[in-house]
Structures are given as C-alpha cells and as structure tokens.
Length: 420
Image (cartoon, rainbow, N blue to C red; front, side):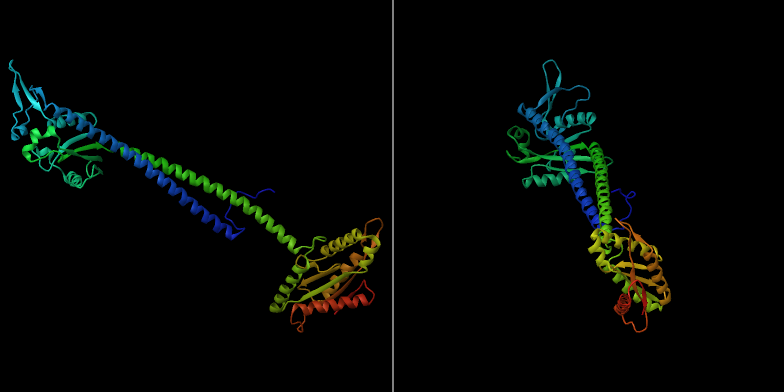
C-alpha cells in the first residue's frame, strides 16, 4: 500500500497524537536522565583525577619530609640567595655551621624545604603547597578560613578535605591532608607542646583547575550534543514509525467502514446505512420543511431467475439493476439494497410527482436492459412511491407507506409504479 506524503500533524486518530506526545516526553526525559547521569559520572571522574593529582603532591611532600627529618634536616651551602631559616632559632636550633675551610652551611628543615619545593612547582606546574598549623611560627603557615576548617575536621577524624575554589581570578582545586607528629619531628617541635601522634597541622595543596573546567565544559558540550542528536533521532524514528502505522490504520479503518456500510454484492449502501441516512434526512426535512420522497423497488419474479438460471445469473441481475438505478439518480439521492432483491431510494428535495417520474424512468431503463448470460434475460421492477406528509411522525411511517405502495404494485401486475 503506497504511503501518503511526508508526515504531517496527525488527523487520523486523536488518541495517537496523545500517545505519541506522551511517549516522546517519556523518551526524552529518560534519555535526558541517562545523559545527565553520564555527565555527573564523567565530571566525577575528572574531579577524581585532579584530586589524585593533588593527593600525589601531598604524599610526595610527606615522603620528602620524612626523608629530610630522618637525617635531622639537610645542610646546604649558604651562597647568594640562600638565607638561614630565622624560625629555627625560636625553637632553640642554630641553623648555621661553618666548616674548617670557612664555608657556611645552613640547615634546611622539612618546613623550609617544603616551601622552596613549592616555589619550584609553582614556576613549573602552577601547583602550590605549604604547611599549615594553628600554632605556626612562620606567618606564611597561617591557615586561611578553608584550611582552618580542614584542621578542625582532622580533629574529628576526617582524613582529607578538598574543594574547588572559584573566588579568585582563576579556579583552584584545594586539597588538605593532616600532618602527624612523628618521632623525628619532636627534636624541633617538642618545645611547642606536641606529642607523638598529634595532628601538628596539615599540608595544603592548590592545583590550577582551569584545565578541569575546560574538560568538564568540553565533556558537557559533547554529552549535550550527543543527547540532542540521540533524542532527535529517536523521536524522529518514533514519529515516522507511528506515522506509518497511523496511515495504515487509517486505510484499514476506511476499508472496514466501507465494508460495514456497503452491500458486498452490488456495491450499494447496505440496509443499516441507508436506514440511518433515511432517519437523518427525515429529521432534516421536518426541521426545514423541505420535501422528501421515498421509492421502494423490488425485482419482479427474482426467485424464478435463481431457480431457472442459477444463483450466478441471479447475482448478475442484482448487479445490473443496481448499476441502472445508480446511474439514474442525482448525486444527493440515496440508494441502498435493503433486502434480497429490494432497494430503497431516498430523494431529498423531491416532491411526490418528481419521485414518481424518477421511478418511471428507472423502471423503463431496467425494462429495456437485457441481462447478458447464456441467453438474453429481460428484467422488470415494481416500485412504490410516497412523500413526507404532516401525518408522518417518524421515518418508519414513511417507510411503511412506501412498502404498502410497493405491495400494491405487485398485486396490480408488477412492472409498474404505485404512488401513495
């Protein structure tokens, strides 16, 4: 079955439109949820990657500090640009020593080593880290609001604290892990009241997050594009398939409707349809005062045709008579087969005389038409004609009077019109 033109707004079944819209909404929401979940997952992985990067820096600093503390600090030659750590003196430690050849070496303890490494990583990678403590000697180790909150969390057993800070000119991934007092730390910090295992502070790492934001934005745009394409394709396929289904259903419905109101043999309207239409025409005529006439026709001696020539010839007679009647009518006249060999014509707008003339014309046409078969067969028809009158309270009354007129035509010798 050929399809109609490209999909247009559904006019075939209202329920299908509702169904399609509902399914489209559910599908779009379902896919949106899936892509949203995917977006959250991807962004989570990206954040986890930068967290691991910050954690790696922090762990590397802890290991480096352990190495430094194990040897009680590392001495470096005091050359241009190398200053002594002034805060060691506050702990009772002289940071400088002089060798026998007159060179001066200064102590690089874990704290100052951490700061100097941080300066190098800042220049190279943009990553910064430093020690923080609530009991600091170096003001550079004073915690800010975020770091102070992290230290408070460590006291409650939290192992790490992080956040993305967007308050500055560029976003930063901030990560803080606790720093515990070890045996090697007591040489310098026992005077501050720290004991082995205490949380002395933390290591704060700041990693530039511009790259993370770009990755998240790029990933999100890719997901949004994929979601729009997927939803568009799926809804397009859904619309197209539904359209094809509706077109086919519409054709089936039309065929079923045609079968339901059509006489299979003659192609005329069947009794149910013609009686429904008669009732509508009766109601319209009563309201408007317009004339309405009926012609009830019956093929004469039809049983003899079947008995003599067989049912195949009888069917041919019915079809031929139906064609001759149909070609004699106006476009708005109604014609239907209401019984075995009985036909009904409803003629809106026709008065009784006009209906009688129409009936005579039909009878003459059928009378002069020979049915072709193994031999020529002459067929005649009887007709009863009547028109709507004031006494007709319903269409059945009009129909009964036409039936009486037909009966009278049969009794009067057939092949004639009786008007009643």
